[in-house]
Length: 466
Image (cartoon, rainbow, N blue to C red; front, side, top):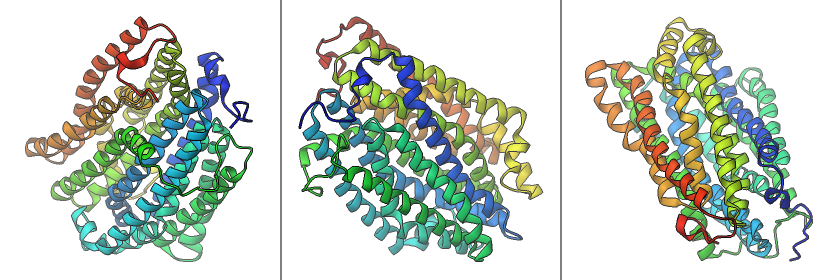
C-alpha cells in the first residue's frame, strides 16, 4: 500500500502538540461526555417512573457491574487494537494496520456472543450474586436481558469507533457518539412512557441506537479510500497480532474488570448496611462522577494517537509534552467535579430522583465519595499513558492498585467501624494512596524521556517497539 494514503494522520508527528491535543481531544471529550449523558439518560427517565422510580434505579445499579464487565471485554480488544494501529501508522505500516482491523472484528464477534450466552444462561443467579433482592430482581432482569441480546452490537460499535479515532478521524467518531446520545434521548421516553415498556423500553432504545451507529461505522471501513479498510479476508485471524493487541488492552480490561468486581462488593456491602435504597443512591452518585471520568477518558483518547504515533516515530520530546498537557487538563476537569460535589450535591442528585429519602442518601454519599476526586485525573491519564506506549505491566499495575488492590479491602474493613459511611469513604482513601504511587512511577518515566534524543531506541523504556 502506498504511503500517500488519503487520510493518513501524518500531522501527528509535525504539528504543535497543544494544537493537536485540542483537535483530537475536543471531539473525544464531546464524544465521551455524550457517552456519559447517554448512560445517564436511562437513569433519569427510569428514576422518574411513577411509584417505582427509586426501586428501578436500584435495579440499574445492580446491572452496572455486569455491564462494566461487558465493556471490559470490549476494551480488551478495542483499546489494544487502536493503540497498535496508531503505532503502525507512525511507522507507515498500513498493511499490518489493516490486519489489526480484521482481527478486532473477529475477536469482538466471538467475545460478544460468548459473554451474552453465559450471562443469559445464568441470569438470575448472577443478579442475586450482584445484590438483587426480591424487590429489584424483576426490574433488573427486564433491563439486563435486552442488553445482553444486543451485547455483540455494543462490542462491535465501540471497537470500530475506537479505530475510527485512531485512524485520524476523531470528528466522525464524535459524530457517531452524538448520534447515539441524541437518538437515545428521543427514543427513551417513547419506549418507556408512550409504549409503556418501562425499564425494558430503556434497554431496547439503547440497543437500537447502537445498531444504527454500527451500520455507519461499517460503511466507513468499507470504503477503500479510508486509510484502514476491510479487505477480502476481513475475518482472517492473525494470532501473533492478536496476542500483541490483547496484551496492550489488558490494562484497560483489568481496570474495567476491577470496576466490575468492586461494584459487586460495594453492592453487597450497601445492601448489608443500607438496603436497596443505598444501592440506588450509589448508582446516582456513580453516574454523576462518571461524567467527569468520561471527560478525562476523552482527553485520553485525544492523547492516545498522538503519543502512539510519536512513540512509533521515536520523537520522545513530543511524547513527553502530550502527557504533561493531558494530565494538566484532566486535573482541572476532576477538580470541577470535586467542587460541584462539595457545593451543589443536592442539585446534582435531584436530576435523577425526586424521592426525599433517596435525595438525602445521595447528597451525603456524593460528599463522602468525591472528596478526593480532584486527584483522579492525573492517575487516569498516567495509566493510559503507559498503555499507549505498550508498557503493559505498569499499566496493569496502576489499573489494579486504585480499583482493586486498595479499594476492595477498604470496602470490607471500613464499614466494620463506620457502617455504610465506610463504603463511601473507601473511594477517597484509595484515590489518595494510588495518586502517590502513580506520581512516583510517572515521574521516573518522564525523567527517562528527558534523557533520550529523538531517534534513539526505545528499548531502555521497555515499551512497544513494533
